[in-house]
Image (cartoon, rainbow, N blue to C red; front, side, top):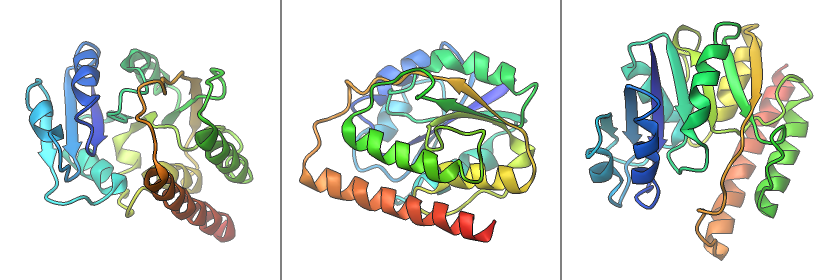
Length: 217
């Protein structure tokens, strides 16, 4: 038995179709609506999933922490609710947990064609993180499976969940594995200048976190 945790923030456009696919692959699903201002919560409530709603937007890290605290199973899967990553990969990730403590997807291994801004950010982050965690080539991948008992101390702020999980796994000496996963960026909305500024600031925050980890190591 495993539980799928889906952090979601303003995902009304894609969440319904995504959950329709996900409910065919998993029986135990927790959607954490991180203070969305659109119809994310009402859409999630239409499906046979547990929905937890933050009163305000607290960031992905807190959404993930809420999901982990709520889950009852040892094996957990984390996947973004934007429908860019397919739930079809989940069985293979859960199976890989028999050999690893943390399984993370790698879009580079699958030959994914990234939008330019994503390619640049993900490539630079991968190179930086590989200085300390050589077994991970796609550190910001939104699909991963892990053992709950190994990550009960997660809970950073903002969007740091992805890297925080990797850094703590490395410090604890946990076994990390990778599996190739594709991603569909055709459903991504057209970005405007404000979107690029927001994403740029987010990546800058994550970059500072990565540098902090490297300095501590």
